[in-house]
Image 1 (cartoon, helix red, strand yellow):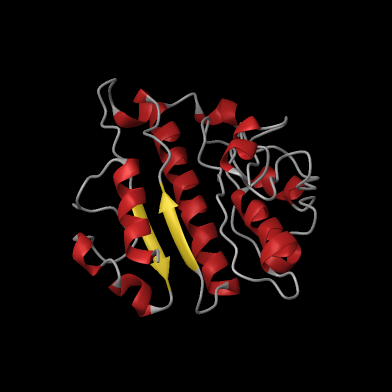
Image 2: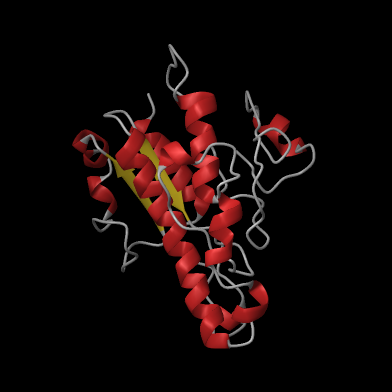
Length: 209
């Protein structure tokens, strides 16, 4: 699921994905929210409709890029009832409730506050998805993309570390990683710092055959 892409994505073929969804086939009829072509909740809704809810759907692994926390962090969508999302036209009225990019970027404090709101929106969309559609087999990995611009981090030398968490209803899933030294919950705290390839190897070791 690549809602930020508006053209063929060669990497999709390289990684061997069975299906790639992007701006051209996600059916979104609503407005853009800053750089983001569609709200994260809409992307999650389309995944549910097009893949997860299919009759006879077996296990599915999905890489999903969520874009609502991408700069310029305004305007910001809000989580709505999943049954009302439809083709995204509902967001034409919702966008009017949020400050515009021009209004926010007049004040650095407003920019930082709006950035926080976009992260909250992305996380709340994921949590709402898990609460609404999750079953005993659902496993989610939240992985931060990269640190934001210096207006948020306070300088050019900000750490490249990003938060990561695994969300699952089945306690046995989390038991598999109990030796990792991670903290419970989805709020970033002090935890081991690993490269992405190290996490990949640890994950496959914990859950692979």
